Amino acid sequence: DAMVIQNPRYQVTQFGKPVTLSCSQTLNHNVMYWYQQKSSQAPKLLFHYYDKDFNNEADTPDNFQSRRPNTSFCFLDIRSPGLGDAAMYLCATSRDTEGSYEQYFGPGTRLTVT
Amino acid sequence: DAKTTQPNSMESNEEEPVHLPCNHSTISGTDYIHWYRQLPSQGPEYVIHGLTSNVNNRMASLAIAEDRKSSTLILHRATLRDAAVYYCILRAFGGSNYKLTFGKGTLLTVNP
Image (cartoon, rainbow over all chains, first blue to last red; front, top):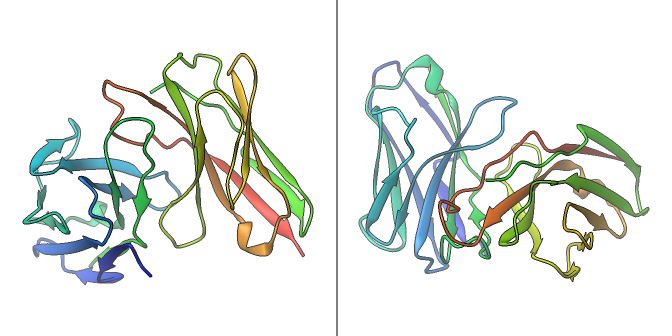
């Protein structure tokens, strides 16, 4: 059974049109992460939530926002997508942020910007 | 996070063991060694992690050198489904260790 679910798997949006990607988890983990993976590159963390506490990476553009209304769900909002935002967006969860805990990833949402 | 060095690519034959090396000469005493893999068009998948002792699970084994400056991920019998990019990542216990910092990884090709 899927533990980290991302919807949709593929999303096409227009340049400048806001888009929301969603992630849900059945693991009841405290931490939820959003990573961006561009073509032929390694995943890169955008931000994460520890419970309700939001933590932004220093180099994450302001164009990217996130919401976590409850333990199970987390959303990635891209306010004005540009062509450079086309990527795979990966949601992950972890019981805690300490180094001894593993992260569980969803299948990703591939975003295309036209 | 401390850096790791992995070969860009490796090749194996199906049903043979595979040993994927990782060097981490600047590892600190509280760094855990994590391995993830990413199959084509999928999200990364946790494989195994350890601190000092060798570790085994249903997917693989992790052999850690006595000085902890290197480690080896062992797939005991490679299958076609094991073809993926394998990432070796160090994560500290404490501090700004909340994220996985992915390097380039090793692309494993499995021949039938």
